[in-house]
Image (cartoon, rainbow, N blue to C red; front, side, top):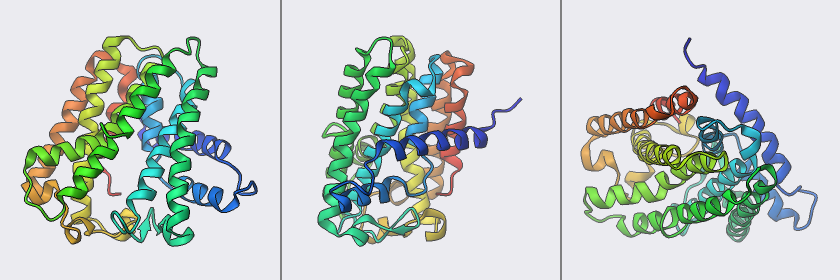
Length: 297
């Protein structure tokens, strides 16, 4: 019997959306505009891929969604903060995200910056809160360090810096891979390892999940590059073709579309191979890997 990914994604989206609504400050609480801006971006319709990966990482080593839900929400908050800041005029200067106006277009640049700052801060509070759900809360210390590394200069922020500094320049494959592995793959990788760590995975299990997450994260960004060429505003929820306009280095620009698709497919196959030691409990991650390759948004 084949794995029903659609049902899996929907069930976890409902769980995550309810938890996000619960952990985000109410729009009725001062400072009202800040909380409105935070909720505007986080609760916008989305795939909830990163929190679902946290849960799938836990399930792959025998854990349950309820035990990692706080951290699952934390990864979605970090992702939302990064999108708010990426869209700012000082960076990518985008008008649309997830099919509607970007945060700074609605709330102004200053409030958007502060909303992102507040989401990042709240994310670490949620990871700390996850200790109350665990038999051994010491795992939280490892996850805090891993998430900080993946979100900071050794991960997402570092990748974004090199991405900005490379705009309009003739850079090679090594620089491009550095950008993608840090800017995007790091957060996807840590989503899986955070779930596996909190669920009490063995060092071998966590390492398998980590290496699979690295391949999956790079594949995700390559597919994003491809969609920026082939997609549309209706499909993507944001303006297509922005990479070309901003003279960003991408896989299609460097390798061409066909070679980029082959590389992404190879990384997805590698992801699934690396998950083989985990057996059937890792089936949701394998299905999510195919979803990453086949998605149109």
